[in-house]
Image: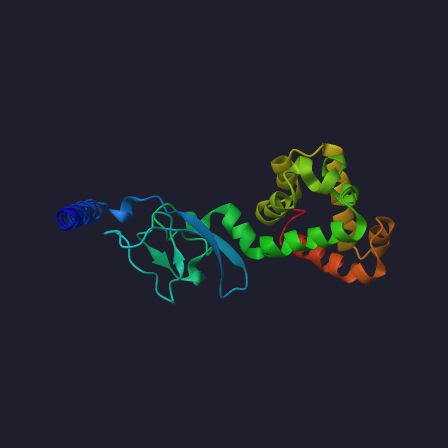
Length: 218
């Protein structure tokens, strides 16, 4: 009786495995959601973000090393040299997107976020209030946090766009403008008046000048 029961259980187990295998084979894994974003360093030295699409779609091909930028939709890849060259190459023209092209000229978001975080770590969570106004208290919490401010600095074409994206007061935008203009004119005294340490002056000046040189004050 025990042997018969064992055989029956074994048979049921095999049947269950067959049924599970049949069900699994009917699952189309390409239909499962899998979009995520990654950051890739381009030949120009900047970072750009783009979606990574599920593989093996009929209308998708692998991007070649000489065409590493995948257009939205996943069906077309283009060379880095065609990004922001004034002529749209992606079907929807995304390669000429103003935010993408502005970010192309700016330091990577991760680098900007790290820079802002280092100032907060050195001077305290309310230090950046001296740059961005009262909403920047508590480690930029009211502005969405360090990462959000870094993204806005990367993608905003001008200081006014930056103020609009973070809903800054006009007085705060004008104060920030005066800081940038002082740096543009070589007035290091302005930075010292904000409490920037001598050991930090070079890095802060370089960071602000980078934004000025990419049209932030235009």
